[in-house]
Image (cartoon, rainbow, N blue to C red; front, top):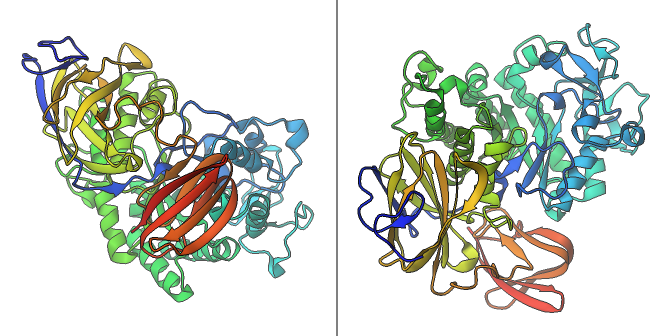
Length: 594
């Protein structure tokens, strides 16, 4: 639409906007550029939901219920979450027919992986490392392991003679046998199989959550020993899989089970082995214990994402581990600092997170949008919402993954975005590598509870943007609404009135792509991330041929793939050409490994 003076709430304006909070949003397309891993948009989606309007990228089989899951008989134990009940909870959780699947070993895992594969999501599977798993589904367990209600579980099967179905009469469960079965069934991670393996879940809570199996707090050295054993096993069976270690409950576990000692031990053991025994340090983030508590809990929640990154967010009062973090938690910076010292090169994942608040409230949606923006900003490798966002929380998720109802997504490359007033409004920005910066995305989150915020948006870069599509949600509806386009942008600057308690997704385009928005550039295929560090993924939805060439025309690899492929893991740093042949058409893509 054309610029008009004094537009109403939610519409763009050029001058005026008097009587409102003023916030400047500065975007620099040339600064801070780094790939956003698409796997930060995962969920702990248990049910085999098939096509998902959330458009998530990862499905996790995990949580407290996974720690004592017996993949041979499909029984698991609830631990202290519910009377230490052993039962067939996982069959209900993934929504499969008990009569058909109850006795089929690993059927809940299979159902989740099959569902993820149909919708091009990666899978994350938890492996049990406490030493015992459920022997039966007979309800509450009174005895501590070892007893007849528990079966010993081991990382490695003596002799490595794997079979499927596994032997259910040998009074032992072997996790390498499960991994071998998954690799045989789905292929290695590099060929579209299980991408992530987690070494159990929240070990610092084992002695409370699963006290029938473990009664003593795990030490960092003991945890490193466990992770070493499982890491070696996974590396042998599937060297291309990503291994996730620690899997901490959060700040609590990283204090009680010292993170520095654990990482130092893992680095020593990895060096001795000749390969990293874990690829990702994984922890969980629930904001409750680190909030600044005021009389307004919703305001507190809207500030909570700052716990992760903002040096100006100070903990006040008695909340949180004051002695450990000091005044400004900056959790991601702190953990990155420890990683860089003790285990350089290790990635970071957050496989449980949510608002811990009523998801029918708009603030939950704003929190989700804010957190997803932070994950892209702060180099998170993978993240999975716990369990599956609903209501406004789902709306905040879709603002990144399905903002227009056509599965259109936020960009794949982070660019610098700065707000002049972080407590009242945050901002995140990205570009699409496939459009050569001709399309950029800006997401602004307004935390102002009572009035609109007049945002002044300024974009620095080599391209001139002339139009912005607008998508937003606010307290009036849980649905994302399409606002009026902002047209006639000049000088890469525009103003917009952000409604109170709203999140707005702007899609800015240059004259190069005006009128091509529905084509989405070679929409038969999707290649990401770009640039890439480890490998890149091609999604085509059907059989295709992919050939990689050096810039001087030398063929490096060639293969036929079904639906999708992970490529580039064996490439050196540099620029390459990828030829993709599908439906008698040829697409050429340039890829960069850094």
